[in-house]
Image 1 (cartoon, rainbow, N blue to C red):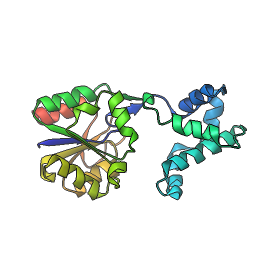
Image 2: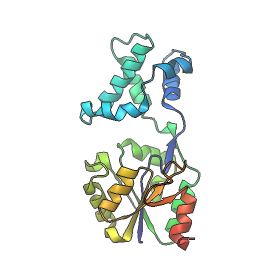
Image 3: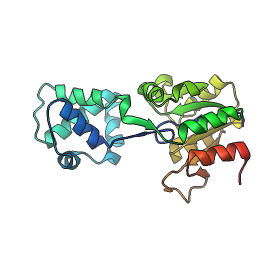
Image 4: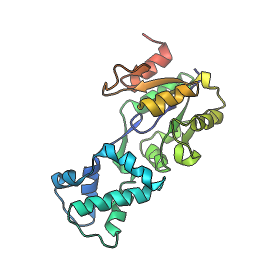
Amino acid sequence: MDVVFFDVHGTLIRQTHTPPEIFRTLCAEAGMEIPLARIQSAYPPLDELPKRAEAYEGDEDAFWRGVNADILRNLGISDEDGSLAEHLMTGFKRADWWAAYDDALPTVEALSSAGYRVGTIANARHLVMGRLHRTGLLERFDAITYSEEVGYKKPDARLFEVALGRMNVSAERAVHVGDRLREDIQGAQGYGLRAILIDREDRHSDADCERVRGLTELAERLINGPS
């Protein structure tokens, strides 16, 4: 292997607050103190949101305005001009809700020191650049590739093709590390990359793929070989 590609969200960085906690903080900034329990009860199930987003045909800002407007209605809060929903949508974009996993920066540095080139292949908006900068990871990568920039999302092979081209490496000489089975593992394998699942919470112990519980284990495997 010559190149290690990383997914970003859930692999290198994590959200430091739950969505209802962020919602509550942003409402407080707008002068409304709302108990967290009320917001949690008004919040839609997070696993339902991806399906709902399909109706917006990629307009994520409009989607999140709609989600926030629905939550406000559930809370009985009037927002006739949509200004509060707009404030919430914008506020959720802030990079300060994100932090790197403790093992992220040491792993990227260790791999670089061992001679690997490192990059990203992420399903992400342009916001990912600010998040990587805030967490100290941005300058560590040889190339950064993400879906909103390229126009394709994993598992679409075209996103992997662009990333490999930027690094001038063949699929057989690259590994992709991510936390999602379909997007990261199946997508990478489908284009001929070696794929490693990071499974921090041991949710996929029966997955038919290479798997690590953390990035330190990943670095040890790639630098020293399997134990």
